Length: 140
Image (cartoon, rainbow, N blue to C red):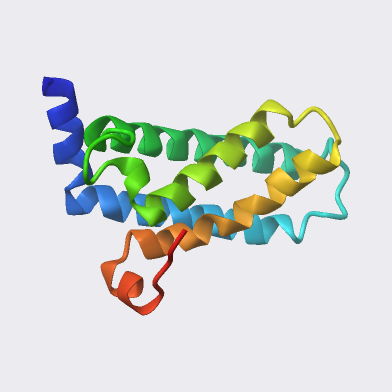
């Protein structure tokens, strides 16, 4: 399939990894910024813009995951997306973000836990940095 081949070529470019690393860094900065806005009311413009930024990051990470899923396949072949433990962690973090977005209107303990899982996003930097993979092995 030509589209799948194109996706495979895209994810193997250095620019792709660089963009993903920048997104992870910006997302991590945004999460750190959120700790300074806990005292603000929910209708404050800063909170509204912070929520919009969070949604944008979530959508961008969903797009990244989908492109990788198309390029690598899901599970069946050797080298598929979910056969790599770092991609499993990535999938888990993105799915937690999707659940958080879907249930953001509700104040349930489960939703708070899903929001807290966003702090795992910086771990994705390890998955995109081969030197760190060798230092910090993961087995899921």
